[in-house]
Length: 156
Image 1 (cartoon, rainbow, N blue to C red):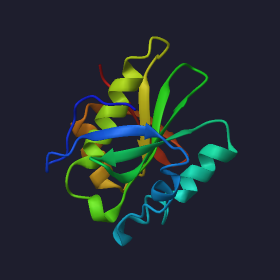
Image 2: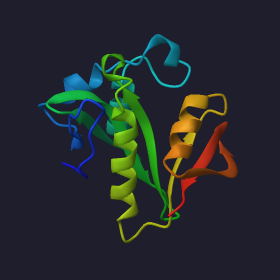
Image 3: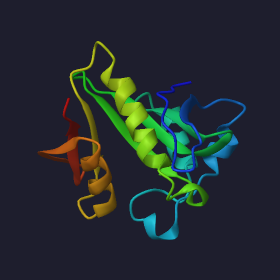
Image 4: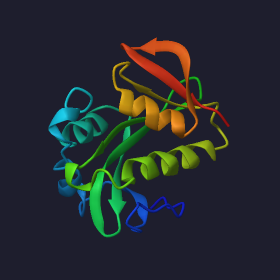
């Protein structure tokens, strides 16, 4: 479990957990709001498959209190940078700050790794909500695009 003491706006602790036999179904079933489908898949199951079928990403369950509320994943690039990706908060849990807390937790955990050169993420240029969220957490666009997405790096 990764826990940095963050809570959502209702006071529930937000923590990150390995995806395992006890929680994978709840993670896989997480679905965004319909208006977010341009940015994330219809179900977090797609991210779980990506993590299990390729050696790049590691999936984590996002918990709010005792409930699985979403998915987030991370990877390490050849240049020593760590990447945050695949964040999806279930529609029933949105609007309470769980996504913000999940990114803060994972960014802090990755930043603390001695072998890191940077912490990065990417988002679609038209995804204004993501740009605002990540900017408010200290991520700044690098001027580089990857696969049509804005690459942003955490300023530390």
